Length: 352
Image (cartoon, one colour):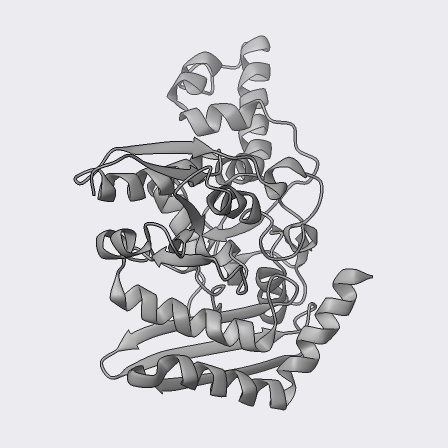
């Protein structure tokens, strides 16, 4: 590989960081140019993810650039990718996966079981909402959109603003109970916390749920109090993984050689095959997680109703030599046990 390769990416900080990692893996062989593209999911900010053209709200605009020759390849969060896409397009590379877990963030470090009755938890994921309500039916799960750092700022803002206000009021009243001035306290805050101090929020969240991988890639994980929601929560198919798409008649072979991680490719193939067979996409609360263990791919699936009161689940060890076919068989079994009905009901509720 010698010529420049043009990589399409969303303009969010997380998307850019993901794409920069891919670029670094390629730069030993060629020049890389990043091309920022605004997607449907970026431009329509007042709708939940599952209403934004269903799966693919953050994907289609990037792949259109690939298909029309504007760029050579596009970098996606795999969990955002539709399971069906044009024949002329291929998943050229699947780099090694980051952690796939969901994490619960709280201002004070409380766990899911420690949240007070009726606590307000933020997420715009149907899957996360259903799994939260399955574990804690008393919770009030409210929509939460925005980039990763925006969501964290919305969580932290109320407590930080209250503390800042108390310190300012204490100074005005001559109260010397604080060992630092309000200005010194502000100066000690991180950049994220300072942005939170200036943010207006409509909902006070006791907790929010995000993907560990996004927080890790943003360098936020070490600064926040969090709980990994395992093993009860099952991640979205492809969560933590990145996919690089290219024209099937383009640079697929070169990208595959440079980027593909065989273990991650097998695991995410199982997850996406189960999802495709069930027809879930972003319209239904479906969690699927596969881990390659020797000759088998240990796979767990949870398909829930939107309120978390009904569920069809299974855990299977699928033979690695026929993992794609075995994934179809697992999905068909789940469909026969009622998963197809749950998916169809979620689709109707989403269209209502």
